[in-house]
Amino acid sequence: MTKIVGKNAKVLRGLAKEVTKDDIKTTKIQNIILFMREALDKEDDGVAIAAPQIGKSLRIFVISGKMFRKKEPTTPKDVVFINPVILKKSKETELMDEGCLSVRWFYGLVKRAKKTKIKALNEKGNEFVMEKGGLLSQIFQHETDHLDGVLFTDKAKSLVELPPQNEAKEAEI
Image (tube, rainbow, N blue to C red; front, side, top):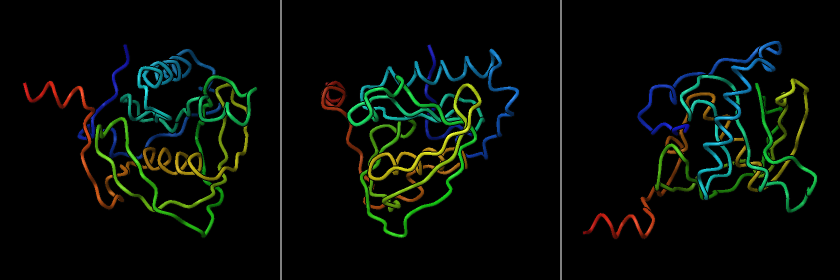
């Protein structure tokens, strides 16, 4: 079982390494992608995960397929981004609620571009470009921040801790 590392893990603060195109199809990289998918699937509230969050300093992130299925029913289960590069961000920004699987139960407002265009390689090594607005734009920015050693808490305003109700009750006992 793959564990998601917490906010104090050193790997979350480093610049993640690029993956060579030749390495993408290796068992090692394919297993890391599999482990990322498994870790993301375990989290009901998770929408994406970056490789540093499972302790791997690699420029890879995965967005849950549930983020695409409403508008694009043929999208695969999850979408893999390897060596992502943000090509363009809209000048228009907004404060968006944000949280993170590595900074559990903390949430805050982060200023993000409303629209983002990103280029990456998929898990087969094929290049693609995607431009999205709203929550997907926010995810692109949040996950590329992870690959650059930045946590959302570095940018957040009005940071609050909101543990789940059942965990809060257990803590009181």
